[in-house]
Length: 146
Image 1 (cartoon, rainbow, N blue to C red):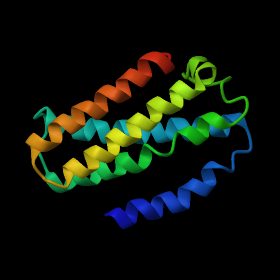
Image 2 (cartoon, rainbow, N blue to C red):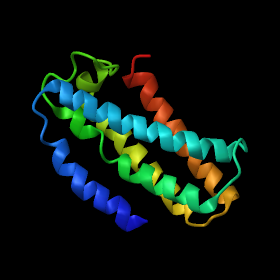
Image 3 (cartoon, rainbow, N blue to C red):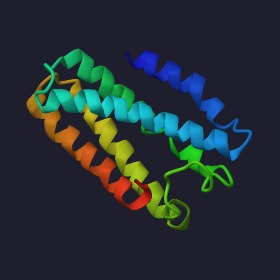
């Protein structure tokens, strides 16, 4: 499982730096966030009891989220990517250090969630999931237009 996630990062990371224009950078980061949302959706359904808890699936999704959490920043660094088809607020570029710190906190939480998921125990996983989701939402509040 970890090998698959690492292989994906090795293949995708160089592409992330190869943006030809701001629209590609915006599309890249939006694609990453779409995948992040998909992982959260499935894990959230398990945590809420809307879907049967499957420890292996949860672990896969948590590890995927941890890998994905490291990817979005590159899409925000491309010059001019603050304009156009984006929902990112100007605060991303006005408060860059704060944005990077929140993203780093999200990465740490996502890594902690992946580690908790290795236990296969929902009572261990749930607090880590809730912390990760809370941190993710906090960033949306300040840095994303609805």
